[in-house]
Amino acid sequence: MYNILVVDDDKEIVNAIEIYLSQEGYHIIKAYDGEEALEKLKENEIHLIILDIMMPNKDGIETLQEIRKDKTIPVIMLSAKSEDYDKISGLNTGADDYVTKPFNPLELIARVKSNIRRYVDFNQSNVKPEVKTGNLLTTGALEMNDETKKVTVDGKEIKLTATEYNILKFLLENKGKVYSIEQIYENVWNEESYGAENIIAVHIRHIREKIEINPKDPKYLKVIWGIGYKVEDIK
Image 1 (tube, helix red, strand yellow):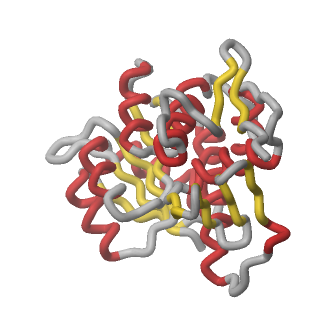
Image 2: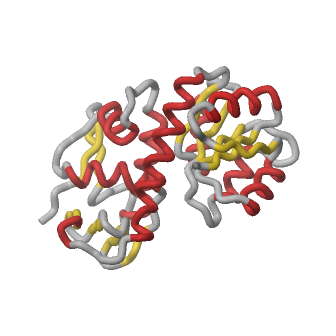
């Protein structure tokens, strides 16, 4: 059973999310502000966090900053506003995804399942003993071993979140080909893309900051303006 930490100062919203996700077989741990969330995170094994942005004591952005210091647990941000600023702030801080309140329960469930699946797949490498070169994806000095989930550039290991890893993996598996934001989202999230521009753009920027010497003049991960993104096929 997967444990989901739900953090929101509105107890009715927390209880509603608990009902929706408990019916899907998830165990819900509840917190009502950022400080309490961080304590629950220390006390429990958490597989995903649903985190409200606007909260007293310690808001969602501050809480996420603390979480991202040493954890790659997927985080879905909740925002009561539809403005792009809140969404981008959460993504820039390290969120994997976001849902705007009021939300469709089916959409929330789909996002939860998608993020947990990627996180679990990403972390299964911890129990796999050997590196298999058949699972090696490369372009130039960029290497990804899909058996160990290890990514290196010029021999230096790069730390990616599960979401960043899966986006890069999809593009590496199809290097040289250009994919739109919608195509990337649908292939990585395995669901239809609705307003995914911010999500993909911010994750792409984070990947570039980690794998490129000069993210403003990228060698590996290129944007094709008006079309999408691709990983260069470098021999």
